[in-house]
Picture (cartoon, rainbow, N blue to C red):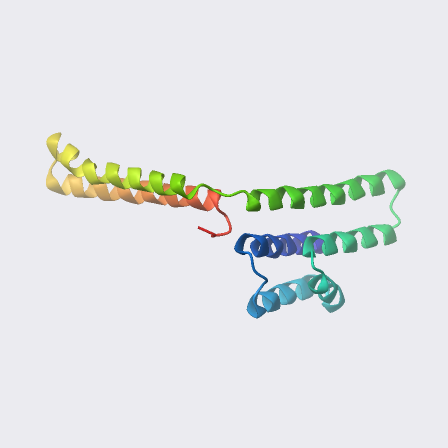
Length: 162
């Protein structure tokens, strides 16, 4: 529900702070406060924004709401276990963000790809393709491969530290 979405917003902001190594800017804080306020209301948004660890603050609110829900004990235990799992996932996400990606690997892959694309036109011309076909094939290959490389970089480094 709204608390799950708020958890996602809080986790994103928390991980971005870790990845960049600085506190949020006033603009980012204002956007997060507005998003949380729209989801949860001003009081809960203020409570989360005051917290040093925003995802933990959201799970505290989840636990409080769960206690007020008067669910059957078995269901309440399962939901509480799910909230605990969310905190475990925060820890796992923090470890992923703090794990450095070897910059040399990323640069080497990009250079190898550029080298391959550089030698593609002479090879295609040597195979007897017309100049217009070589241009089209090279442009298509370059677009697809460089886009795939960019997707790989984004997957390796989702918080744009590189």
